[in-house]
Amino acid sequence: QVQLVESGGDSVQAGGSLRLSCAASGSAPMIYHMAWYRQAPGKQRELVAQITSGGSTNYADSVKGRFTIARDNAKNTMYLQMNSLKPEDTAVYYCSAEHVARPQLVYWGQGTQVTVSS
Image 1 (cartoon, rainbow, N blue to C red):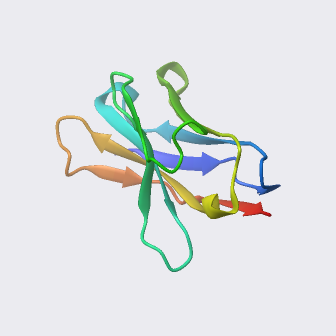
Image 2 (cartoon, rainbow, N blue to C red):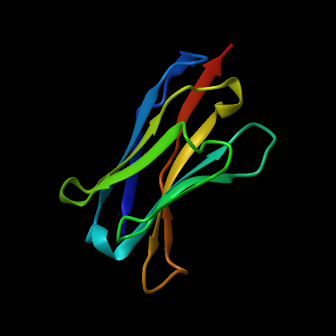
């Protein structure tokens, strides 16, 4: 069992930056792949970035070069550094944890709102 709590969401102007955090508790972090998803009003939830238990990363094309995902296993925390924010980045951002050996086990946080104004 994993509990995930996101923080860091805020309202910023276009071009600004935010850093989201996802604090995990309950299980050893190394046995989970972690990811950030987002969901804008009226749209489906989409993958933003993912980081494996070994540290490999992958990004959606829409955020490449602007967002950076990282994890600190000693602190049981994952981060999403978001730079050069655009109004289209406005969404609720969720973190997820997928068990490495049991991919059907996926845990979600409650989400944090990011609003980017033009």
